[in-house]
Length: 185
Image 1 (cartoon, rainbow, N blue to C red):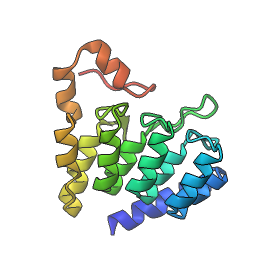
Image 2 (image 1 turned 120 degrees about the vertical axis):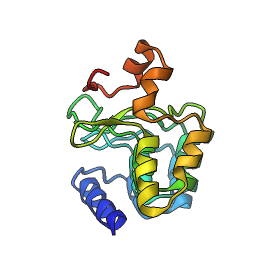
Image 3 (image 1 turned 60 degrees about the vertical axis):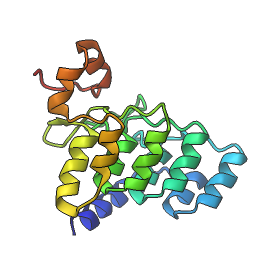
């Protein structure tokens, strides 16, 4: 039930963002072949909505490991934060991997991990302002729905936010944080 509510909210968010290009429509339609055709024809794998969501964010909302692999191999930025387009700032600054963690798409998360550019421990903010990582999200969702995303993230070096500051330098913590920052530890 929670997943249905979350996906409904994400659907409404996507449709209010006027990102209606052929590539984004193909992502919504779950059509990997159409995505491949459009990428081959020169579509930008990093196109963004006016709010800064990328096509990769859309794929993570709808799911699809094959679509994710296509976009990543075409150069889509796995670490792009929503709302980070220089025009409109999102307080959440979500990454595609964090959206996949919320949705519980273990196979799609695995595609991100295969891409060596993916920062598994990017820090994002919840609506309450609490900072978390994809692993924090996967643990919570796993407890609610029994997904195994947390195992995949842990094997890739994923760390909970509360433990991350103990394992990386202060400079690394700043690099991983959203632009709006996180409370001091």
